[in-house]
Length: 622
Image (cartoon, rainbow, N blue to C red):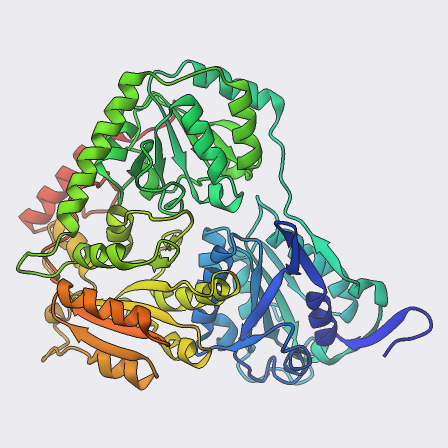
């Protein structure tokens, strides 16, 4: 209750939630709550106090009931991606294993630079009931618990030991989540006793505040250095990463490329920065890229890397580029801009691209651009053939092609770890900007359905008439499928393409490519499985309330997809694909893989020698 001295007495939990409700962000001139709500599973560590506080604001901050804490975190990540990091969701879990289940999701958000607020139960500060249920006891340090494990995977971490602490902690957490350079998960541990303690908070703390995401201007000298280097380029190339979309710099990237006639390649996170039909879009780069992008990458002499953290699938473990190529790193984060001895431009992608455009009097040689376009034309022909149905076997690429031909241009496509990220990255032809989410920052199986659910929640706030389509393998489905039920319960329709190849087929492919025999990846190759059998995925999906059917081939898949588009709830379409045939064979850069230096197998030894023979292509610097 309010007091004449301008304070209000609240519990710690009540103060946290009241403060969240009053935080807004301005997006394109419109103000909305920066927190879109949350995902929660209650237990003894968060139900009595935080649960009480959340129940009073369930209309302002809708709380989606999760089925698994890890998938709640994946859903929050999918939501943040759809909102281009401008809004976030919180996740709340009980003390102990409930909170521990969020570790993987925090790792995903950290790797992908995504905002996510974790409000997690913790052990009692008083320690009077010590040890409590599910407490992890450390004999040498009683302050150390499971929640401390989040420190390496959080951008901000705090444990609330007194109610007044949130006055500093909450703004610091939000500032981190909205910072273009430091964006990532913010973890706040909430001891069970402290959640219910009261404090006389200043009422001014809960006044409405409107936030804006900072745009850092690049340093003038760094722009000048970058311009000087670009002017020397005979074979320039732009790598467009996910940061281009997060800074809303897609049109600026396109304008820069068109003005200076520079070919553009996309990272996995940067897919859908440009339409596939744009003449300067030369394709996705790297290990799961395209022959066209990799062909110009190995010849480029100056590389403008915009909004990318240059992870090893982008760089082919640093073999994709010429050893003497110079890199200009344009990034809001100094850490990413300076990678691999890059000439740094630390700043917002939009402001930096505009500054470079204004200062640069340069056009790339026509012969270089013609070479890039010719390579892209060859890759387009390959993709057209690759996705075309008609073989005696079903493939991922064929399924991707069917969906690509039938979906709406603004439908969102989601994929994650396994074989499908590579296949979607290589074969998907972008129909509209910002419509592709391939989770490969943390390469996390299980994101497909949960991340799509979170994306669909966000999409329903912006484009409710569009669909969220997710490609999922049988391995990922069996890891984490319960948000099919979540999507049905919350009426957030998904279209799930479940492509069954009988196990972890892409890792089986890597196993075979390194000379190893198939072992423990495909169900048929597991010695501990006497009689392998397939899961009835249709029955499983229907049991969770979804519409589901199985198809035999891509033609039937197309008809089923049309029915899914017309359906009023989540629909699962199952199709068997071949575990060995039909993989996209083009577009692969070298990737560093640890292989046995000694072995009794001739095949493994030969594969090791072959793999190591190309290591000399790795850059050691410039």
